[in-house]
Image (cartoon, rainbow, N blue to C red; front, top):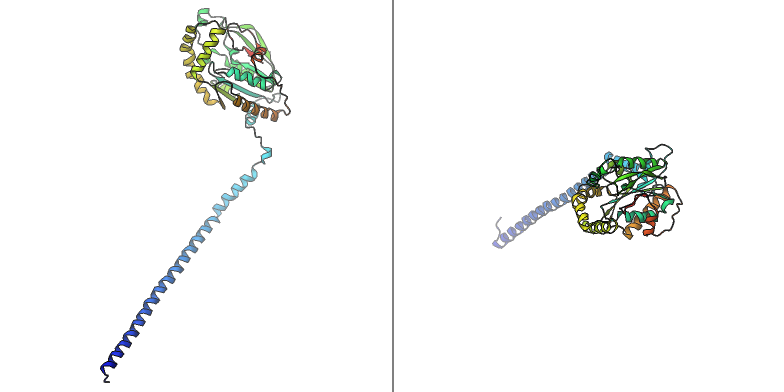
Length: 342
């Protein structure tokens, strides 16, 4: 068929247009198919991830852990049946080692360096807890070993700041007797002769046993008997100034004598024994008697006593120097520290 030039051009243009449309449709079809396949793949992956996550959450291992946790929570006692005073657990643990005649007694230990103010804090706690009505007060100083068989020169050369200078085993025995409800005969020590007298002081068990001394935390046998351990932490320069003032005014010593003893025995023994024992303390009180610390300590102890006995009566006696003198027993010549407190 013979076509005019114009007709041939029109035919070629139509074919080219058709081919172009077909190619465009083919390309578009592949593109949208890929997009559709990608969406379906993403949905599948998401579904797989969700399925995996749910399978982990609902897995037997996970379910077992959850059930065990719920079981443990169910076994915990309600809060109202749990004592909010942690020291009661310690008291009960100590009481288990004694027979049925034992009484629930709260044993409080107060330690600190020489001149730290531990005796002042002990006196304040003694007054706050009702004094002799509720508290048996014992000083570790009463248990210095008897040196009556030594010459005076040997006695004066003795290192009284070392733990070996004290009969701590006897103090441990007395604390255990008081816990059992038995009385104890406390030795009376004469510091002017560095020896024990022939007399003793009998103390009876009370709700609280208050033990005070520089080295009471250094002996495990004694430290383990203490339900509450309080350490009075005072700077060394403050302690030295207090010791100089006390020994010069009350013991008739010169500054040179005080400094010589401090350098020779007091300071080295403090570094070796007293300072490390601070780590055993439950409570550390800075610079002797501290009104805030005293209030927290006594309030906590009163809660413990009320839990043990219920309705404990406390004599409202403010602390002062007269109170300290009232309960000092025994020979105290040449030394201001209390010999026995009850």
